[in-house]
Image (spheres, rainbow, N blue to C red):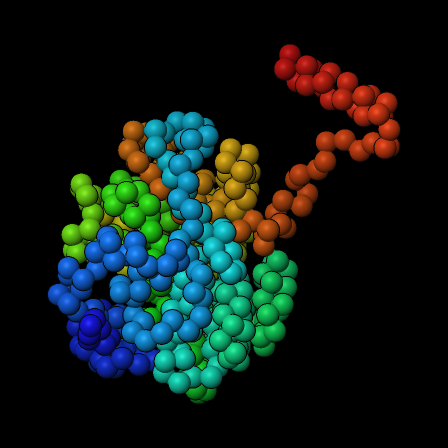
Length: 419
Ligand SMILES: *Cc1c(COP(=O)(O)O)cnc(C)c1O
Ligand SMILES: [Zn+2]
C-alpha cells in the first residue's frame, strides 16, 4: 500500500520527495507529511487497528513509517482514566485523564515522537541523532538512540532540572548544556543541523517527528469507544502536540471511524511565565510575541514556539480557548491530581490541571460536557518545586508508646483545626 506522497509545504502546497528536510525552499513555510488518504479508506478500520499491537504502532498505517519500526515498539497505548474524584473536585460530570506520565520507556509523550523520528533516521541512513530539548525530549532521544545503537547529541539549557539531566545522562549520550534559553539552544541546533549530517529529531526531522503525536489523539478516540471528546486541554510548548491531537481526530473522522459528532474544542494550557500561545488566544491575535521564559514548568518553556501560529489557529477554528497558570497554581495542580487520582505528574501536568480548572470556572468548558485533560509527563522528574513544601507528619522513636503519643497529638491538632 502506497500511503505517502512525500512532504508538502503547509503554506504554498509545494511538494517535496521524502527526506530529512523541514522548510519550503520557496516560501520558508514548514513541511508536513502528505498522505494518500484515498488509499487508506476502507483499509484502516477499527478491526485492523484492534488487530495491531497494544502500542502506538497499532496506528502505523496513519504514521509516516513504511518499513519496519526500528525502535520504540512498546511506546504508547497509555491509560485513559475516568477521573471521578478530580471531576467531583472541579464540579464537572465527565472527566478523563490521558496518562502519558507512564509512557514507555521515558515517562512522557515525547517517546511517541522520538520513536517515529529515530525510525525515519535509520530509514534515511543516518548514524547520529540529536535534539534541542526542554528535558523530556532529551530523555527520550537518548533512550531510543541507545536502543537503536546510534550516537546521540543532546542540547539543553544549562539551568534544566537535575531530574531531567541525570535521566538523560544515564543512557550515555553526549549531553551539551548551553548557557541560554531553549530558544537560543534551538537556534544553535539549526546551525549545527546545517553543518553536520545528523538527524535532529525536532529540526530537520520535524515533519516526521511531529506526526508521532497523532497517536496520542488516536488513542483518546479509540479509548472513548470511537467517540470524539467535547473538550481537550493540552499543555503547549512548541505547540505541536495540540495541533496533532486535532489532526488525529480529523483523520479518524475522514476515514469514517468516529461515532457521533466531531465537535471537539481544543484548549491550550501554558504557564503565565511562558504563555505566548495562550496570550494570542486571549488577545485574539494571530501574531505571536516571543517571550523570555520565567516559570517552573521548564518542559513548556519555549518563548518562541515553532508551531505557535498553527496551535492558535486550531484553538480558534475548533472554538476552544486557553488559560495561563502561575507557578503557585502549577504546584497546586500537581498536588490536586495526586491527592484526588493518585497520579503524580510533572510541572507541565500541573499547568494542565490548573488551566482546566480555570476554564471550567470561567464557564468556557460547560460542566456537563466530556473533557479530556492531557497529562504528558512524570512527577518524579520535577521534584524541585515540591522539596520545601511537603514534609512527613511526625517523626518518632521506634516504640508503640511514641506512636500512641504522636497519634493523640495528631488527632487533637485535627480537632483543633476542625473547630
Ligand atoms: C514537550 C512537552 C509538551 C508540549 O509539546 P509541544 O508539542 O512542543 O507543544 C507537553 N508536555 C510535556 C511534558 C512535554 O515534555
Ligand atoms: Zn512553501
